[in-house]
Image (cartoon, rainbow, N blue to C red; front, side):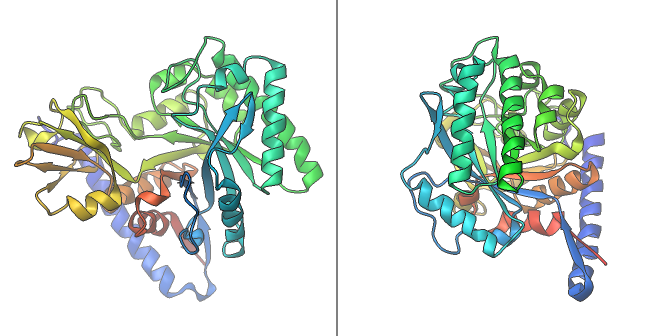
Length: 388
């Protein structure tokens, strides 16, 4: 395997140099910030607390531009709260605008486990109207700024997803009709209402949607550029920036971004999704430090950044860097365990990529995975630019 030598490796090193230069300029700007104004790319956090109540000071509102509260559900064709404390939590999140007046708060509906009702809901104009009416009422009741549709996935099986061929066109119609109702409501409410989607990063997602049409009705397309590799199959980088030539799947965030652009989505509407968590595999041979090797799922396969940074890094696990893909990974020779994850270095390079390619910004899943704020601080410092 030759991950140390490739044009991708050269590109990764170039991004590293550009990042250092950007940070130097940023530091000078901060020291002379008296007369500076700040401009910022979108920084979107998915906040997923389930039945827990958000605590004061838990969310660093000043470092975010948008919060997507996850998840609302769909019952009998209507949007409903997903968890018992949603009303209180949404009130708390909206109140954060006192600290950051430019912050927007959306509710995200669906998700991996709750996408099973989308196909039936979107099937007819009447059923779509029922949902849209309930969604608009939900947004107004909680004084939200928008709605995020997380249908996983139109025309394809997800976790609990009933799907049909008609989903492709019905997905477009759902978003078109949502946009029309939101536009009409804006005139009555005297404030903007926004609409976004959480989009699968695969080629098959694009093949089962009409992205050139869909993007017309959306403020942002949030590309879930992670989970490219999952435990239980061959190990791999689950959120690579660039495609490693030795990757059996030949996947990456860069490839996904280019495919969405080719499908008709302008870069200015594309938000790059990044994970604040990692995946781990067991029974992985010590070949290339476990990268692209057979492995098995080891509970828990999912590790938050807080967990893996506290219990794995430097504690029996060695960190390695894929110079082609611009991401780190961990391997333990003793435990024969491989971990793919994101860290400040890789996120800084992804933020540099967002600036270089003039994307709308970044979104991450999920806020609670890094209570220290280490990863968010990296994104915020890199994407916040100063100017005189």
